[in-house]
Length: 427
Image (tube, rainbow, N blue to C red; front, side, top):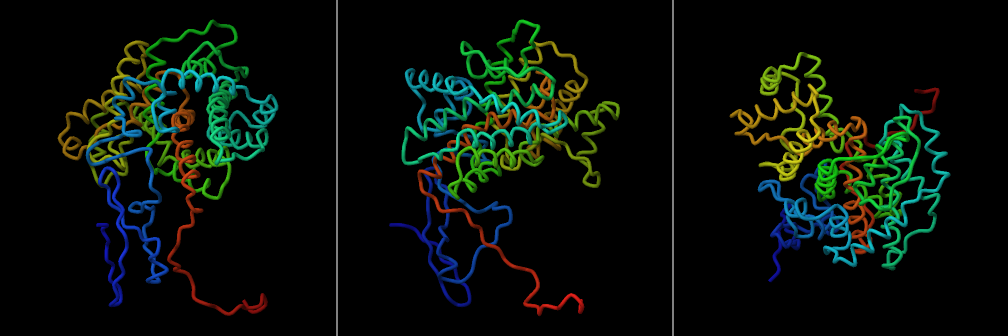
């Protein structure tokens, strides 16, 4: 027997069906509320509003659980590579050997970007923020791929997916190379997806490219950990834009812009900026831990705790190990990273932080790794976007295949009531 929820208002009762997810999440289906009762719900920030039903990612913030298509993030980060996870998120199952080989080769076949795109990149000054450049270049792909995706055709959908997975790393690498005054390049088909990305980003024209395996492993894990995170700001944006039947590239460009904000993808950049500030003040980590405890002090400790995870961020546990390995392997000597280690040690031992479960999160460790790898601070969010790409694609594809209606939130109007118009001379 299906469950219902009852709403009583103005002496009248209204019943609405209850939806129960596979992990026993409960939602009241109120899509007929306005039609039947003439009222709407008000939920600023949509913190308690389910915008869709999705089979992609399960997240339990209270228990610190994150799963992609039912697979624990811990298992995927340890046993799979980024393209396996991308395939899983987009198509619903882990690929077999033949499927993964085809997927990888098809992506490589689409890794060429039209030479005219370089002219668009040339139009940006070096001072342009990389996220603005990446969003613009992603949107510009539409001009070189004007045909819309036929979502009823699996073949058409697949071609669009491998096309963006092939071209996006090139655009990201070019964004960095433009910033660093390096010649634009292409990858090496003999390399894996993540190592190829790293080579495109850092290869120097007068040097043989070499990279430590620990670096590639850490990058691979970071991309996996960022691949999807349920209905966050950028993912919801991709689905919202796509709900108007805007194309995949346009929807992704909108998602990049949403990710750009410091409250979302820019969080790991904020961590490094905070660490730089502590360094400039003298590097006393204990002093700043005390400031963080003081409610009257405006200082905020970035990279600790999480808006969703109320216990611990499962991704942080995984990437902490990689951070330790990379810093040890590279032998990086950096006072900013020393400050990060000091903050981490104090937070994990301080009763104030332990009782409040304010542990270092994935943004804290990803910022440390990116800095150790020589990635500029304003490129951190671009790296986040590279990881989140398959999640955005999966969410866009799911939304279109489910034929979800165009997104159109309601509002409660709080402005002026009707006013008579006054001619210009009477105002």
